[in-house]
Image (cartoon, rainbow, N blue to C red):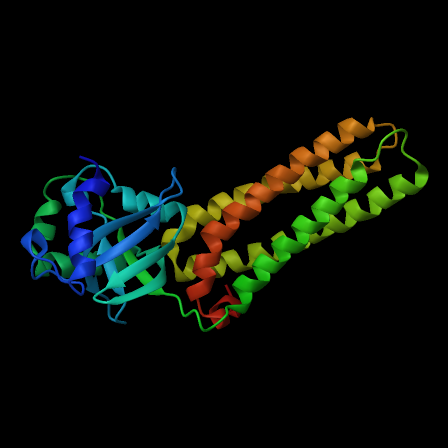
Length: 286
C-alpha cells in the first residue's frame, strides 16, 4: 500500500467531518498538508499532528514515526516551500520554512512534552527531526519584492528571446545585424549582472531571518557564479563577427535554456519566502 493510499481514508474523513477524525488521530490536533511532489509535480496530501508556535502559526514535525529517513512531504517542501494547509474547515496557502537552532529544539521539546509518541520517536533514531513552521500567505497583500522579482525575470526572458531572434539571421552577418546583436547582448548581460547583484544583497537578510534556508541560498549563489561565466561567454559570442550564425544561435539558445532554468528554480524556492517576509526586514542592514 502506498503512502497516498494509506492516508486517503484519513484525508476523506477529515474533509467530510469538519477537520475531525477518529482512530489513531482521535483527539490529536491534526492538519492536512498538501505539497507538490518533487518528482511527479503532482499534489501530495499528508495528515499531520501539529502544534502552534508562540505566534499562532502551525508547526509540523518531520519525524516519519522515528524512521531514519525524512518523510516524503518534507522532501517535497524543501524543493517547493509553497504548500496548502487545511485546519478544521479552513484552507489557505502557506510557506513552509524549517525552524533552526534553539527555536527548533524548543518547538520539538514542547511537542514531546505533550505527546509520548513524539518523545519516543527520538529513541528510535539518531536523525535530527526537521521542525517546520507554516507561515500563512496573506493573498490580499501583494508583496512588492516578490512581484518585482517575477517581473524582472519575465523582462529578462523577453530580452533573451529577442536576443535569440536576432541571432537567428541566415547568411552572412551584416554590420548592422552584428551591431544590433551586440547592443541587445550588452543590455541583457548588464541587466543580469544588476539583477543578481541586488539579489546577493538580499540573501544575507533572508538567511538571518531564516537560518535553515542557508543551503537553498548557497545553491542559488552557486548558480549565480555559473551564470556570471555564461554572461561573459554571451558577450564574447555576440562580439565575434567570424562565428557561423547557426553556431552562434545554438550557443545562445543553450545559455537561454540554462538561464531560464535558474529563474524557474529561484521562483520556486524564493518567491514563497518573499510572500511571507516583512519587506522592511529585507531593507534592514544585513
